[in-house]
Length: 454
Ligand code: PHE
Image (cartoon, rainbow, N blue to C red):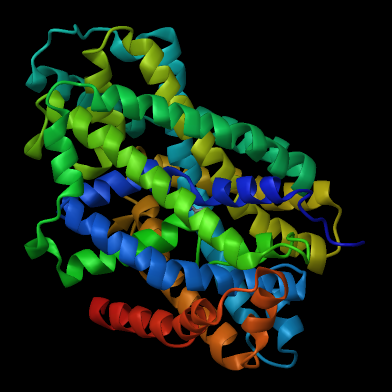
């Protein structure tokens, strides 16, 4: 059976942006920015997107489209009789591991969405509560929720079922179609929140924190984090974009597509910063009140509580997060689904079930690692933290390193040029930058980061 393709240029961009834009932008990015010095981190992040993100994305697109197959077979088709397919296997495992814990956080967003709709989220807190009491109210609420066993599981399962529904629909009628609907909605919601947030009194202080760099905060540690954030946010290093690249028609201009996707992903991160930091500064929450990962589930509800119609704003915001999470989780699952369809020759429906069913068990372990299973640890980390840590710090950088070596050194020198040239015709200089990026800059920087982290 011929491999499915995305049906339009706009649909293919929506789906790829959908994969890139996710909790990584809206949940992880502000937290990383907060803990790594604000604008200095943003600057490093932008450098990483250009120097590493775009070249690597082009490498993945090229490998996917040239081979026209799943991310494991891609390597064996392009380099038969070698062990390079193991790079695809590593990527497939990474994407599945990420899916296991990411879907749990996605489940939290669903719960928060429902709690906002019913108004329960704000039950027991008044708009005039002091910053301290409101902070402790929402912190307790979040901890109580995620540390409990049942409710988070129900919402995680709900999210898994929604994913299954979309995935069974297939590449065109499932993934592409929902992305075409949800991505514009996401941008509309983001813009609305951005305007509201910037109009708060005192928002300028937050804008300054986010946009005026303090160069003394540019440290190797911040660079490592910026690099990890760039991989994660652009869905790189695990074959997701090899998988999607295989769904690109031959006439797709890869260079343009990679630029568009990366810039939209960056735009979402910047808009999120322009929502969160001004809101935080204008409501007098700063420093101590802000613990990275709770920014979205604790700090923002505090802000909403002080606005007119808190439930409405909270519901819209958590809807935004759900949407962002959903279009990312489907892309993580697609890596393995495409493999099962191709290698094990299963129908779409069966492949989806084979991939999604074990997720019920694995995500349960991740979810319970905040509750009953919090004492089940691996290397001192709960299951959730362990998966998060090994994927972000080791598996993704190693995957990205291998992919760049494969595309830049193992494949013939003109491989990428041919993939990028026919229709995109990037000017000579652009191609030179990208080519050298994939051969030298990407592997070089990743090696430095990996070595320094050991
Ligand atoms: N890029 C997604 C985000 O920012 C996460 C993701 C990682 C998606 C890996 C697909 C593959 O949330």
